[in-house]
Every structure is written in C-alpha cells, then in structure tokens.
Length: 137
Image (cartoon, rainbow, N blue to C red; front, side, top):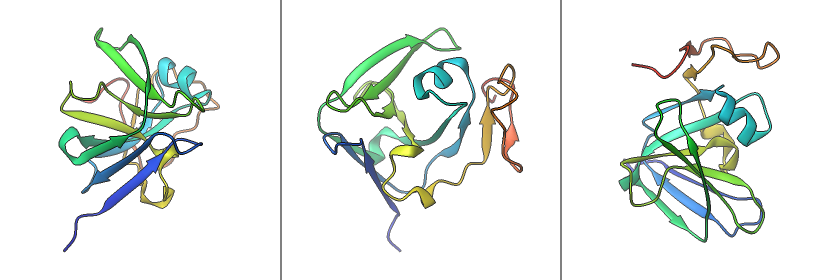
C-alpha cells in the first residue's frame, strides 16, 4: 500500500510542498498569534515529521514568541504573502502545514482544538474535537 501524498502551496504557486504519509495530528489552533496571522478565528493545521516533507520555492520567515516562550516560525510566500507552513526548515523535527494551503482540502480531518481558552465566542469549535485550554500534554 502506498503512503498518502499531500501536496499544496501558496496562492501564486511559487512556494510548494509535498508531505508523505499520515499526519502526526490535525486540528485547529485558536491562540491569539494564529488568529492574527490568519486574519481568522483559528488556523487549521496538520503536523508532519520533517523527514516526510519536501519544500520547494522561496520562503519569507516571520518569527514571534510562542506560548512556550520559544520562537514560533511562520513561513509565507515572498511573492503572494500566503501563509503556508510553520517551523524553521532544517532546524526542527516537525512542521505544521496550514490546511488552507492543501491542494485537496478533503484530506484535512481535525481531531483537536488547542488554545481554546480565551478564544472569541464567534470562533466556534466544531463538535467532536478534543479541546485543550492550551497545548496538549
């Protein structure tokens, strides 16, 4: 059986990725940083091991402080400014792919909602997601 292949990228196509295999986890992040970065109530994300990802094209990196106090790296396309993935390439063991960048969005099946404490009332958590006030664990 062939491992699933998830492909995606930015709006203009300059920044692309391929993710092989099943995601480590999938969910919605409702933290204030993700809300601001996305311009929405949450960011839908899929996590993959770095070894299962291939990126092509240029990235523009923005770093802010995460809830843990460590750097949170977001990668956008320097051409169209689309938010595509999280994590510094070559420096981490996993990355988050922002589900809105998937070529086939039906591959996204969230199971968790993180940072639900402090989310605005209008940012509704879908039924069936396991909720965490902050980061799980």
